[in-house]
Figure 1 (cartoon, one colour):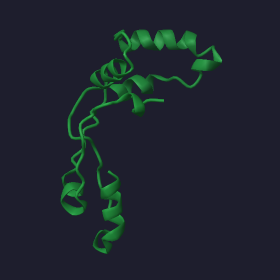
Figure 2: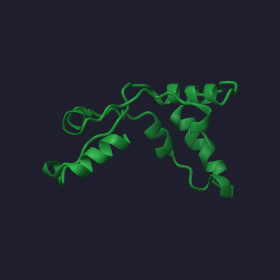
Figure 3: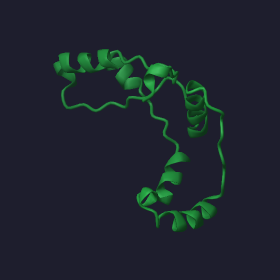
Figure 4: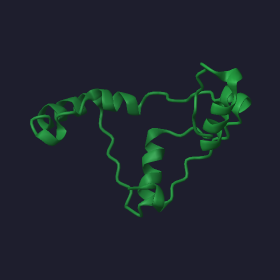
Length: 108
C-alpha cells in the first residue's frame, strides 16, 4: 500500500481523486476473527447470539464503565457487506492488495 500512496503523490493527473483501498480477498468478519485467534495461537472461541439477545445483554453491560461505549451498531457493522471495488486504484496508481494474512508481528 505504501507504493500506491507514493504513486498517488507523484501523479499530478490524479489530484483530487479518491480511491477504494481494499484487500485482495473477500472474507466474513467471523473468518477474520478466526484468523486472528489462529495467529495468536489461541483457542478459537466465538459465540453467536441473536441481535435481540445482544441488545438485552447490552442493557446490563452498559452499567459498567468498560462497556459504556458498546452499541448494537457494533453488531450491525460486523454483519455489513464491506466489499469495495479497488479496480481504479489498481489501474491508476498500481495498487496491489494482499490477502489477509497475519503474522505475530502484526499484532500488539
